[in-house]
Image (cartoon, rainbow, N blue to C red; front, side, top):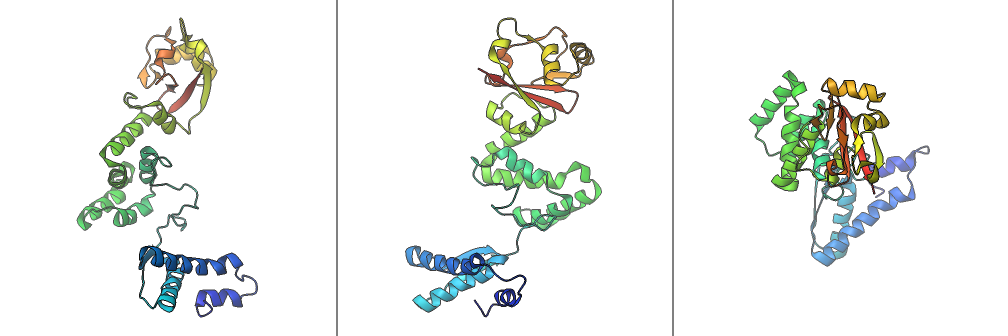
Length: 280
């Protein structure tokens, strides 16, 4: 370890130095490689380029203690615009496990890729030909607002991980954000889609019988300033319940309107959403 320039440089710098955790990390990873070799016959370890020193330490340990050859494969770190690497310890992490990152969130992660990074990610993560990537690169340059490259990346990676069904669900959930039909989406998926919009609760008892006047609910959620404002908004064609336009100013909301009895999605205009959770 002391022969490695990165370690030696840190030790020689009185201000920076090196912590015990950093110093021992390489030893522990090298020993881990040895254990994998002994238990499972593992002779290859892969990782990001920042793991090169740790991997070669394990290779050296296996050579010294077992007299055998082991190998390491490293690749450039995947970083964002800010230069921060993708990793489980970073903010905004996406997971391959659907239980930790839903297909919708996974799809949205790639759809939100910065224009400056999307072509590089296509080269890393997609199986498109060079000519196809070149065409998408031109689309980013000439029509960035269409986000064709991001969509191509999101669709391919999501389908590979979550299958055709997962991709279809993610696309359906995405369309809901832009006013598409809610039919086919479950309550859990709706909660995922509208996790970042304003929300409130209402007791189921308030929706039973004759139901609750929509103009009253709009005012209570803050989508309108008053019942009168709600009526005018409905008359103007700007109010939606579960993304279906409401035309009757006397419309009441019932428990049966809630998706799986749990959520109502209210919308005013194109983008002002409010999620109402039904409390039993």
